[in-house]
Image 1 (spheres, rainbow, N blue to C red):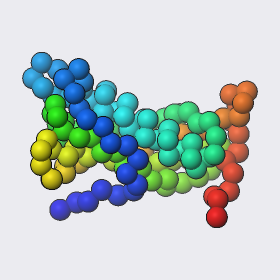
Image 2 (tube, rainbow, N blue to C red):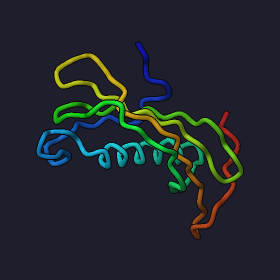
Image 3 (tube, helix red, strand yellow):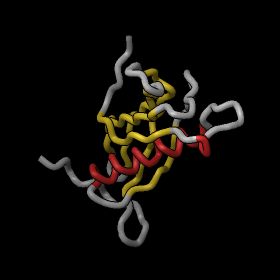
Image 4 (tube, rainbow, N blue to C red):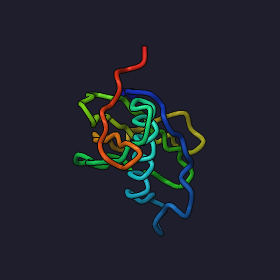
Length: 127
């Protein structure tokens, strides 16, 4: 059985407004939560403002349902001069159960920006 990798960055509950008529959660909602989690993790690493520059391909392996808890795990894979790559995994904790299933994963590319909105160097990792 596979386990999540990275740090638990975001947990949220899938609600009826996030679903289609069959009760399946919209993929775009899941992706938006992944983007939020990447923004949190990347801003902490960059110690400043970041934006999403790219997302690699994403395949949905399992459906999320109303009532499931979406758990987003992130990990910085690579840091360049102004950008970083984060591995992001979305896991569903099934409603009123203890089991988890991976929903999807991707690599997000985040860019650090200065106050003027221009790419800025990412500082060395805090020790």
